Length: 150
Image (cartoon, rainbow, N blue to C red; front, top):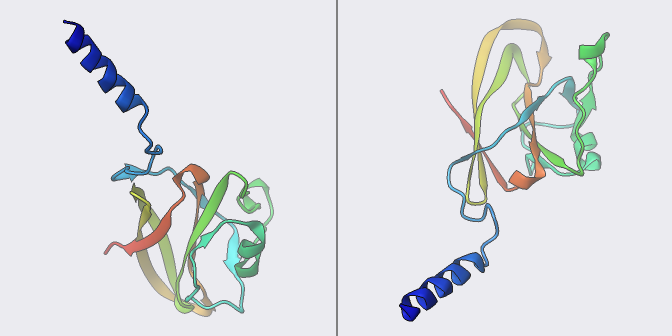
C-alpha cells in the first residue's frame, strides 16, 4: 500500500515539474486575430518583403502609411506593439480590384499558418496594391506562413 502511494506521489511530482513551456507543443491551435483597416502600402515597397511580421512601430511605418478618412470608422486600426504584432500579405500592384480575405490562423508548434482567399474583381482605371494586415496577440508569436486557399 505504501509503495502504491509513493509511486503515485512521484508520478504527480514528475508531471507537475515538467519543463515544457505552455504552447511549445501546441498543434493546430486556433489563433484569434483582428483585421487592421485604413492602411496602405507605401510606393517604395514592392510585394516581395523580407519578413511579413512586424513587431515594432518603426518597422511597420517603413512599409505602411495611414489612410485616414472622415468619420469614426475612418481611423486606422490601432496596434499596440507592446502586446501584439502585425503580419501582412502584400500582393503585386494591379489594375484589377483585388481583395484579400483572412480565413483562419492556426498555430502548429512554432508556425502560424495563415489561410486567406484572394478575390479578383473588375478592372479599375488606376493601379492599387492589395494588402491584408492582421493583428495578433504576442502570446501566439511564431514564424509566419501564408497559404492562399483557392
